[in-house]
Image (cartoon, rainbow, N blue to C red; front, side):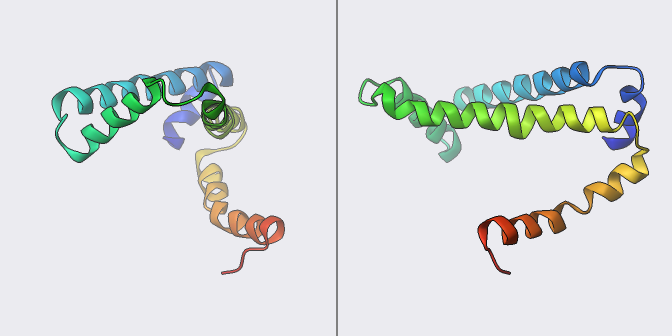
Length: 123
């Protein structure tokens, strides 16, 4: 992905690359969920998706209880997915694939440092 992104990042805007990748991921996810519901309704995963759908569409859940879930979906979609796709596309216009992969390998180190510094977590 990083090597291929290097080719396209130099000729396409980061917003367009992020939009294309996010759209492709969303379409494939919706298709997979639809496949699991229709083709395998009796399996554990298919029945769990159907149960979740029925729980959301039932009138037993108050709208005020759904707002935190909707907020979490938007946070997950926009910040942790869309922004990171955009930032990677933007950054790879200026960095070689080799350097980008070296930077990505430091992610566990920074995750541990932030977890220790912000949350007080220990190994």
